[in-house]
Image (cartoon, rainbow over all chains, first blue to last red):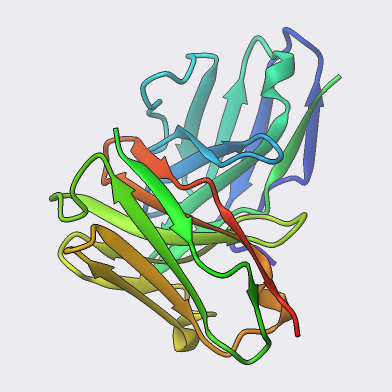
Length: 110
Length: 119
């Protein structure tokens, strides 16, 4: 059971906008930055969003992050086939004194 | 541009200690503001944070693994290492080392190494 809760799957058609949610608590998302990682199966995770809504250099602006209270979401606009991957949210948890992850959301581009 | 590379046995027997090393190239492991960590991913499952060590030497461990984990840095070799004791089949996973400059959105990952726990 993951500390952060994500839907196990999401899907969309090319060009669509999809969102992936991440729910936590006051000890993690509520107090600390939220991060999103993208992992294409068989490859290394890639940082997609840091500090809630910041994009690392090279990440397209089709990807955006937001946070409100103890929940966060990742939005992908203009969905493309190469966006098909697993997406993980992560945050520091003050109660556990450690980093916690969501269980991951498998995004399928139909 | 930093590069990280994991090394260590791909097969460990139950009850023994898993030992992995991550070699950092292209920069100094002592760089201020950086932290270094280990994560793992069991086959077909999600990511799990194991622990990390800051540039100042402070360590943080996953509470569920804390009693079995040690992460340390060897600045002379520009490496950091992971030791996980008393392993069981549940510790079978791809183990990733990573490094990040805190707050910058810049992080670096090793390619990952599969460690299987089996007799």
